[in-house]
Image (cartoon, rainbow, N blue to C red):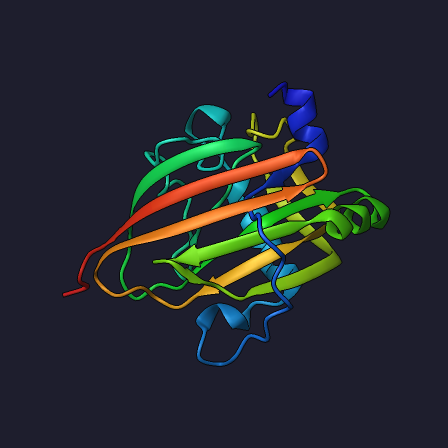
Length: 200
């Protein structure tokens, strides 16, 4: 996909099927401590922290899953458009968070239109994960030099939105995470094979 189009879309992740109703985070999920703005700001900072050649969103195999991951949550992603199959190691005792589909924009109107057409699903080991709908909210995030979206480096203020999934820490062993999503002309499909090692 041409870099200008990537920057214009500024989208990531997936979700087909019918969008789930908004999920209500509970204290049982550590990720629920993040507000709509904080979650999206931290995720976009992660997504734009590395250049395309080692970016976890542009990655099609999973070799860059661990790139720039924070210590308290493990982020997952869709793609900038298209399919990917990733194999990743996930730390034990860490919640996972990511969107089925999402975007950011300089204005609320773009995000509102995007969400009107957004559909997404996330499944873990064949079980549907309830999605949390986040309508346009103001965020501030950081973009690194030569980031994969072609965005200018530095602090960015924008409106962000999407359909988000929250997962408790996974049990040791292998798990399958599937993300499918679409909005307008964007379609994404990602299959993660996750390997979680016993913390002991």
